[in-house]
Image (tube, rainbow, N blue to C red; front, side, top):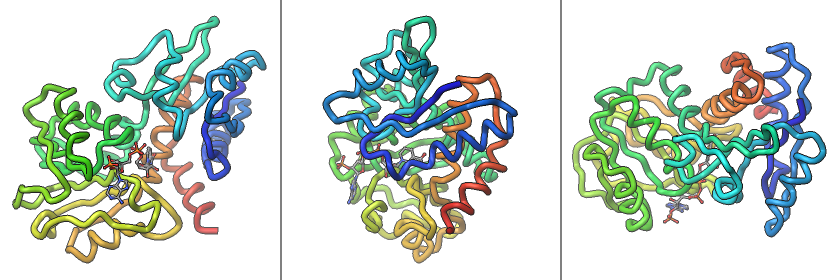
Length: 270
Ligand code: NDP
C-alpha cells in the first residue's frame, strides 16, 4: 500500500519511521514517504500522489485546513476539528478524518490518566486544540477551560461547541482553583518557551501534558515540574497514537502503539 505525509516543511517528520514500524508489526507491505507540498500547490500535490497509486496520506502543518476543503466525505471529528490529518483515496473520492484528538485521549488513558470528572485546562486555541475538544468531551470531564494568548480565539472555540462544560479565558486566567490536568496545545515549546500560568493553577495532584515532544523534557514540562506537578508527559505518545488510528483506517490493522513508541523514543534519543 502506498502512503505518505504531506507537509511543508516535512524533513523533520517521524511519520515514515512510525508507519514502517506499524507495517512490520502487522505483517503488511507498506511504502510511506515524505511528500513536500509547495505552499501554493497542496491540491495538485495530493492529486499527483493519487495518480501515482497513492491510497492515503497524513497531513501536517500547514495544510490541515486545506485538506478539509479537498474532501468529499468527512468524519464528524474532522468536521468538529475544522481540520483533516488523515486522507483516504477510495474509488476516485477523497475521505477526510482527524485522528489527533483520539491519539491524545488514548495516550492519556493508556498512561492511567483519568479524564472522567476531571477539571481540565487546555492552553491554546489553534488547530491542535480544536481537534482534541470533542474527543476529550466524550470522556465526560467535569469541565474544560480553554485559555489562549488571543482570547477571542478561545472564545470562538467555546462558542463553536455549545457545551456548558467549556469555558474560555486568557492566559491570565481568572480561575484560582488548581486543575487536575493541564494540556499545552500551544507551539511555544517549539521555541523553548514555557507558557507561564498564574500561581495556584498547578498543584501537587496536577498532571501536565505538552503536545510538543523531543529528546529532552520540553520547557513547559520543566516549568510544570518546578510548580509542583505530580507528573509531566510530552506529546510523542499522541503522535504515535494518532498515527496508529490513521494506519487502522487505511489497512484495517490496529498496531501495538507501545511497541512503536519505545522504538521512536529510542530513535529520538540518538
Ligand atoms: P497553530 O499554529 O494552529 O496554533 C498555535 C497555538 O499556539 C495558538 O493557540 C497560539 O496562540 C499559541 N502560541 C504560539 N506561540 C505562543 C507563545 N509564545 N505563547 C503563548 N501561546 C502561543 O498550531 P497547532 O495547534 O497545529 O499546533 C500546536 C502545537 O501542537 C504545535 O507545537 C504542534 O507541533 C503540536 N502538535 C502535536 C501533535 C502530536 O501528535 N504530538 C499533533 C498536533 C500538533 P495565538 O492564537 O494567540 O497565536
